[in-house]
Structures are given as C-alpha cells and as structure tokens.
Image (tube, rainbow over all chains, first blue to last red; front, side, top):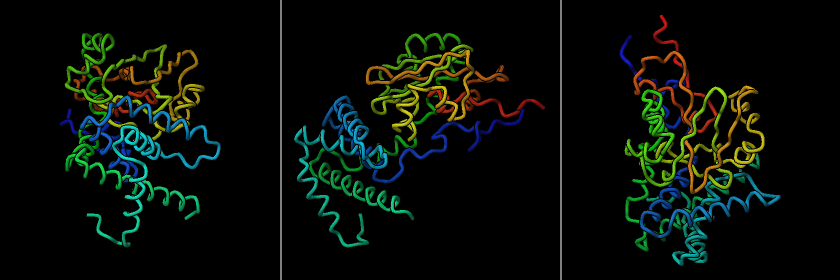
Length: 111
Length: 207
C-alpha cells in the first residue's frame, strides 16, 4: 500500500464542505456571524430566534406571490423582528441607517 | 441578463445594506465586540464541518462498543470527541441497514447538527426539499441520485429544537481492516443526512 494521501476532490475527499460554499454572498455570512455574536452576548436565546425564523419562513410559504426563495432574507426578517421585540433595535432606526448607507456615493470605501 | 436576475441582484443589494446597517447599530451599542463576527464566520467556515461527523461515523464502524454508545446516547458519544456547541444538544443517531434507510429534514426551518455537520447546505433549507421529502421521500431521494429498493423502509426524521438527527450510514464493503482515519474519508455530509450512501473504496488495494 502506498502512503495515504487524502483527496482534494472526488468521493474519497474529506467532506469539508462537500464542494459547496456555505454562504452565497458576503452579507449572508455577516448576518450569520452577527446573529451568533448577539447570541453569545446574551441578547437572546437561540429558541427565541428559531421561533421568529419559523414564522418568517412560514409567511413566505403562505404568500401566493412570493418572490424567489432566499433563506437568509428570511433570517434577516427574523432577526430584525426579534431585536425589535427585545427593544434592542427599532425598525425605524434601522431603516434610517440603511437609507444613510444607501446614500453614500458610488465607489465608496467600505472600510 | 434577464429581468429576473436583475430583480434578484437588487434584492440582494438591499438586504446587504440592511445587514450592514444592523451590524453598525449593534456594534455601536456595544452588543457585538470588534472582530467577533469575523471570528465566528471563520470558525464555521473552516473549523466546523462534516469532517467531525465523519469521524463519529468512522469510529462507530470500527468500534462496536462505540456504535452501541452512539445509538444509545448520541449527544454523550459525540461529546467524547469534544464536539459540542449550538445546535448540538439532544442528538439522536439513526442507523441504516439492509431493511431500513433513514433521512433527515427540518420541515419548519433549518435545524441541523452544526457541531458534527457544519452549517446546512442550501438544498436542506429549500422549501421544496423540506416539504417533498416527507410526502414522497423515495422520489426525492431518486432525484438526488439515491435509489432505495422497494423492500427497504424509508424513515424520515423531522429535526427540531428538541432533537437533531445524524444518520449512521452502512459501512461500505471492501473496507475490512481499514482504520478510522481511512474510513472517515468515505463518509460524506450527504450520507449523514441520508440523501446518499457512504462512498465506496475507489479501487485501491485491488491490484
């Protein structure tokens, strides 16, 4: 037998991500990280977030004219509602900040 | 580019902005320490993944006593490896055999055993998988490339906050004498969700 070397690809490759990216866009990973950071900081319990997530997903499924399925959009809706319910961030101030960010000149430096 | 794609990009940009705004507000409020988000994302992208679950399955294949412990109390047996954390509480291992095939879903959202499988793939979170695998599991599995014989019972397990499932796939033939490290290379994420079989040895040692 030759020296065992793990394949990078193919069925014998260690199943790291099985070839699939976990996040489809950078904002999805930021949103996930933000949620977990808030959880670690004790801002809410996981079950509280999960309840909001189930509700947000269920709403999308019940809408007859819903748009394309985007999992992390549902996640965002769930987090916003939970933070509002916890009085940690009101929808109005989030909207104001979002508009302010949108008004930045094109090509601005994110950092 | 079609109009649909364009709408999609616009929606994506809008959500990206909202996330950025939310992050800024939470950081300013001191709820999120600097660097915390990067560290968490790195952890889940690089450190936590299905290789953890693959090691659990490989040990269950190689060590009958461990297999017994895993099936009796998966949370405890998995903790022997030090794998724990959010979504890793209340684990149950379900074993495939000649007459039974197990497959896992979360019908309500996306419950999934992060510490052993990492974050779920996109299809696991998709409404189509979540509803159809319950109604017509054989057909969905066939579409995913896994044909289950008629005389094999298919059991669908619905994950929840209370219980998260890990499928213990059947050990492939031709692996006699393999150690755990080598066995682990045959265990894919999809096999541990139950939408695939473990990989078979790729012709090595057959010369």
